[in-house]
Image (tube, rainbow, N blue to C red; front, side):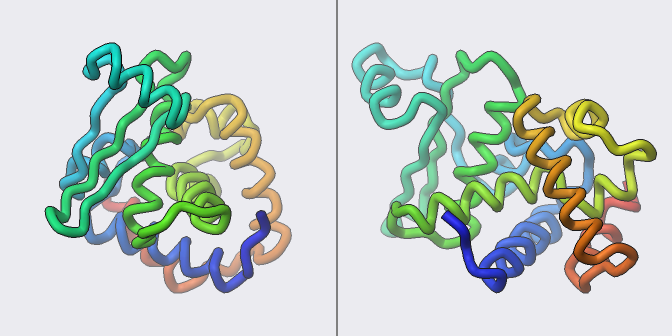
Length: 183
């Protein structure tokens, strides 16, 4: 699903504001660290009893989150038998996206927003531009600890970002660069 340009801009701002609020300043960006700092509980499928693990796999082969407005508790469940850390990190960041965007329902638009949040938060083009000299999918994968597929998507998004605004950072991108330069 394609979102409106204003939605993409808002998601980028939310991601960077979340980095700032919780002191996220290291590359590769760890969804585990971010969730811990945000007070979000993370539960691997392997910690569940067999019945709950089967139910979790029926819900999602990768992961999902549940939140309660009454207790203000948010829990992310993730499949820790995935083949790569990059895939697990992406899944957890996707669920953090739901939380950070204030999603209270689950629909196509919310999924598209959380997908973009995770893609942008894990490998923001301005950080790619500033931390990788020779930008390739493999360099992005290695630097940002992404899965092969996520690195390819990040590369093509980076190329699009370069084409559409080379040499010009938005105010929120400048804010992010300030956060990460002090590392």
